[in-house]
Length: 220
Image 1 (tube, rainbow, N blue to C red):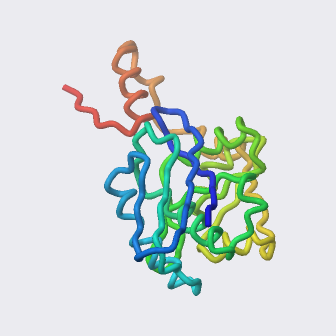
Image 2: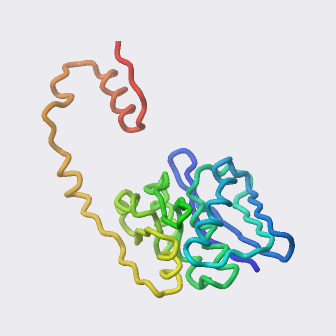
Image 3: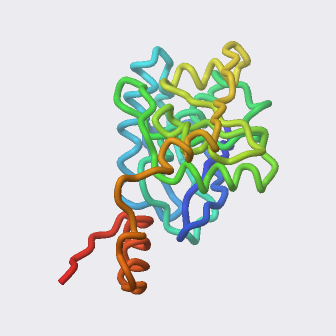
């Protein structure tokens, strides 16, 4: 039983598509993840197993192999939990495979099946649009970030079962809409800004870069 779910990862500032391949075969129960996974990705097997069981689905008592392709790039973070779980359910025919190749899926799973936030939703939404996907499924906590991108449908999901129902066409999620202009307008006015600092262009540039990247700054 083989299934493939499409996800995404960030390399630098850009995102690229990851193929999450799940193969389930007869044999002693085991869960192996290959494709240069880091510690957080390897630990996903326990989160995925508990999330599937606690969401009311059957976890297959067989040998499960998950391959994250391309295999020559290191995979980091817990954002592959949700696509792994969907891949396992698709391989056991609990999720329809007809729509799997139309969406990118990202999200960390709690032990109860809740979809938790993941990093990189904005560049991943850009990747979904640039590769012509019908949409991207992201955690509800990341939906506004991803919805900044025009030209791709962004669906906010809260629970594993919600994703299963959506892919089986039992739950018609509405795409998240965001008025980007109004968001920027709400934060366009500040009591103090760089206009009050004369000169010091290099210092102001350093502060801008630190603010954009979330870096620390020490001014002496």
